[in-house]
Amino acid sequence: MLECENGSYYAGITNQLEARYAAHVAGRGARYTRANPPVKLLGSKGYVNRSEASRAEWVIKRLPREKKLAFLRDDA
Image (tube, rainbow, N blue to C red; front, top):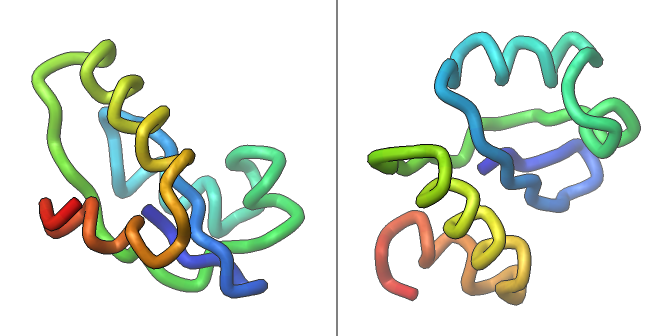
């Protein structure tokens, strides 16, 4: 999960975290991060396959802001 310049959080999935983060910072990532550049990597979680990662992304994108960081810490 990334914190963006406007203070929002962005969640996505990748199997190459460092390269994907660099792409977002360079303006070559998702449309959202091109408009709202990331300022910090807040954290990540590993999953056994893409399907599980996609399910987790779906869940986190629907959480209220205050619960997103708790999700990363497994508190949610």
